[in-house]
Amino acid sequence: MAVVLEVKDVKKHIGKRQIIKGISFDIKEGQIFGFLGPNGAGKTTTIRMLVGLIAPNSGSIKIMGHDIQKEKEKALGNVGCIVENPDMYGFLTGRENLVQYAKMYGNVTKERIDEVAEIIGLKDRINDKVKKYSLGMKQRLGLGQALLVKPKLLILDEPTNGLDPVGIMDFRKIVRQMATENKSAVMISSHILAEIQQVCDTVAFINGGEIKSVESLNDKKTKDAKENFVIATPNMVEAIGVLTKLPFVYDVKDDKDKISLSLDTGKSSKVVSELMKANIEVSEFYKTHKNLEDRFMQIVEGGEAKDVAADK
Image 1 (cartoon, helix red, strand yellow):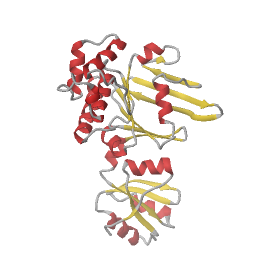
Image 2 (image 1 turned 30 degrees about the horizontal axis):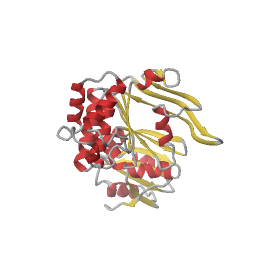
Image 3 (image 1 turned 60 degrees about the vertical axis):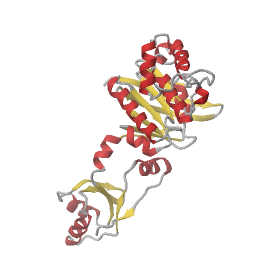
Image 4 (image 1 turned 60 degrees about the horizontal axis):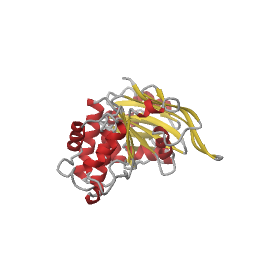
C-alpha cells in the first residue's frame, strides 16, 4: 500500500516550551488511523501542522509525496478535514454551504454535491438553513465538506461530537467506505476510546508531545479472542518451561519479574493445576483486560488494569 501521510521527526516549540518532541509515523492508503492522547498531549498541535495552519520548527510532513512546507498547495489538495465544531454559515442552506466550499476546491461538480448530501444523510434537509440544524446535523455537514473532493487523506478531529447513535453508525460506514472505495487514509483524533476501537485498524498513543506507541488493533482483536493472564512465581525458568509445552497456552513472555501469556478460554484452572504438578509456586495469577481503554491507561497514564482470575 502506498504511503499517503509521512510524518518524520517533527518538532514544534512555542517560545522555550517544546510542544512536539520529534514525532514520526505514517498512514497508508486504506488505513484508518486513531490518534489518542490526554488533553495537552499534542494532538491538536499535530493536526494543525498536518493541515498547514502552523509550521513545524523541524522535521518533515509529506502528503502523497509532497512536502507541506515546500509544496503546500499540492500537499493540501489531497486533504479533507473536519474539526470538532465545523464553521458553517448559518444564514445559508446546507447546499449553499457545500457550494461555497466547492468553489474553494475548484473542481467539484453539482452531481458530487448531491452525492455527498446523500452520503451524509442530509438529502432531505440539504436545502434548509443551517441555523435550523442540530449540532449533529452540522457535524454531518462538516463531514460532507471534507468529502467533496474524495480526499486521499481525511483528518477528523472529534468527528462524532453531537451525533446520536444512528449518526455514529452512519459515520463508521462513511469512514470505512472512504477507506475501501477511495483508498483514502483516514486519521481520527478522539477522546472516545470505544469509538476508536470500533472503527480504526491502527492507533498511535501520544503523550507529552511524544509518540509512545503505534499499534495494530487488528492484531489486538485477534489476540482478544483468547484470555490474557499474568503469573508471578519465584520459579520463573521452570514455570516458562512448563507453560511453553501446554497446547492451550500461547505467547509466553518473561515480563521482568512476571510471566505474561494468552490461553484458550476457560483453561486458567488447568494452567494452575499443571504448575502445581511440577511443584512450581504461584504467588500471583490474574487476568488482564486488553481493551483499548486499558492499553491507553497502561501506555499514556502508566497504569494497568487487572482482575483476579474467576475460573479456578
